[in-house]
Amino acid sequence: MDSETLFLAFEKKMQVAGVRASAIATFRRNFFLLLEGQTGFIPENSLQAIGSLPRWEKLDESQSAKELLPQTVILKLNGGLGTSMGLAQAKSLLPIKEKETFLDFIVQQFLALKKVYGVSAGLQFLNSFSTSADTLAFLKKYPELGDFTKLELMQNKVPKIDATTFHPAQSLSHPDLEWCPPGHGDLYAVLWDSGRLNEWIEKGFRYLFISNADNIGATLDLKLLKYFAQSQLPFLMEVTPRTEIDRKGGHLCRDQKTGGLRLRELAQCPQTDLAFFQDIERHAFFNTNNLWVNLLALRDQLEQQGGFLPLPFIQNRKTLDPKDKASPIVIQLETAVGAAMECFPQANAIVVPRSRFAPVKTTSDLLILRSDLYEVDSFYQLKLNNACKGRLPVITLDKDYYQMIDHFDAYFFSGAPSLKQCQSLTLRGPIRFEPGVCFEGHVTITNPTTQPKRLKSGHYSNQQITL
Image 1 (spheres, rainbow, N blue to C red):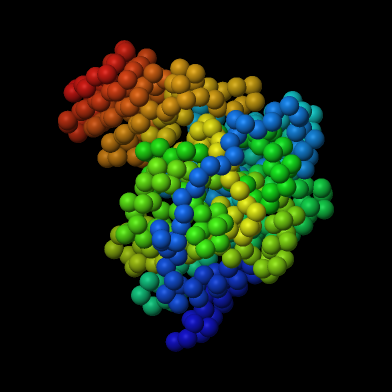
Image 2 (image 1 turned 90 degrees about the vertical axis):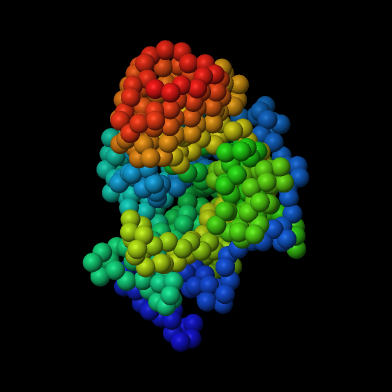
């Protein structure tokens, strides 16, 4: 069966489901590349390592950027559920400080800008079919936002591909399993098809700041906004130096042929090149997914490409039912929002402080955020405690007991321990923490049984403890 005939079944399925034209065009391009045998891999021999980059701390702070706020849209990528942590609702509804959620912090940070500077930026959320209802229901608690339904952009959905037949995957009992999100690179097609991009430009907006909803460190930095506007760059990626815990994170690199910057994610790295990918000295900067986009430059690119950006695709092989490892293997075609830098020859990156990257991918990350490592300032921003001297401890939690949020909360029933003097913490086995636990230096605590045991209140410094 030829490629066009194979694609017709996908096209019809998406049209019936109301998928928009640009998302269909993007899927078509990537599906044909897949059929041609392209893997989406970016081999090491096609890349060059990055040398020096501009740095945040060297930017000029002498001029105010508040006049740029009414020209700027803050957009949060809010399509994830956090299923790996056992969540069944929008991940941004996870409490992180004093029962306040990511969404609370995002809205409070937005409102604080308006209160302090007297002018307001725009605010948007890119939701998915999995997070839309939860998010919109939550935003009702903030009437000062106005019509909260206008804060939403809806991510598209695309069909999963049967890895054996290359036909649309089918699940007669659970049709929803036939669909998957196309990755946050779908944002650009959504902006085009929804008409929101042109609407923003007509209202005078010129700059778009994109970040993940679960990265509470990604606030609208006026120094960066001023730099981006004055530089007249079309696209700017915030990066930060990689450490041992970032070996699997997408890194910045340079294309050998074009000399342009590009992003390589782990799923785009051939297995034979994995050692190069994880070499944090060779590839020294990783993508925070804090991105700045010039809206006029974006509109020009989308007009030239017919409503979508030709982003490199990511091929993810999974089971049709993520909870059933015996279900058929499917292919999910995705794109990354940061990969758009390849579409702008003048795109650049800037090295920012680690504090601008504080995501929650695991319960280990959540423990760090909930602890005294972070403090909340008057702008509702989380700042690293000075006592930790700019470095975060390495937290290793036993996945058998702490990976799922309900179990995690049960073990830390009285809140997070003090970690501001901690360099590493390893927990093995089920341990319930009493109030007033403080860790310093390198600490390992082991419960060799399967029955939970309590760790008493107290100060633990450079110890290995067996309960």
